[in-house]
Image 1 (spheres, rainbow, N blue to C red):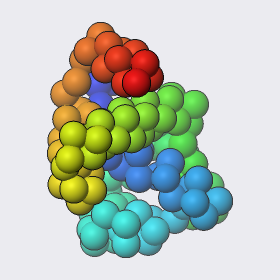
Image 2: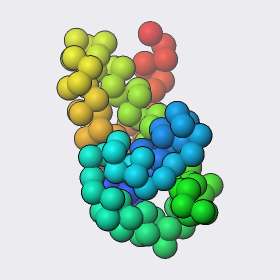
Image 3: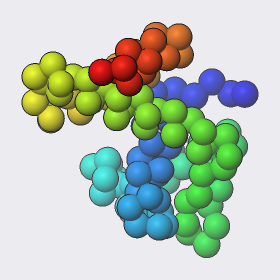
Image 4: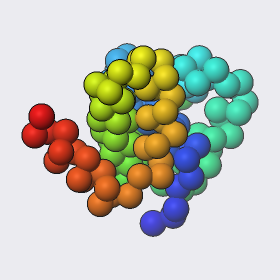
Length: 121
């Protein structure tokens, strides 16, 4: 498995969210969601395709099984971290930004402990 960087994880998470909301994903959808230029998104998607995380079929971007797994893991971390931060009194916008930063560096072991603790409450 190729090590994926934070920006790649963010792209995969964005693709997952758009796919869940719209049913299909095009580069322009990602550009709008991330506030990036379409050429920047095209380059990133190309790299993700080379790494085996996405397929592009008729202009539609699909997550591969491996890409979907990474995206779902990152999204789960984001959602839990955001909920925990908001429960502590952090406003939604700040919680979303901070969760995005933390989700990439949190070890699987620490996340499992946080998840178990949060589910108890």
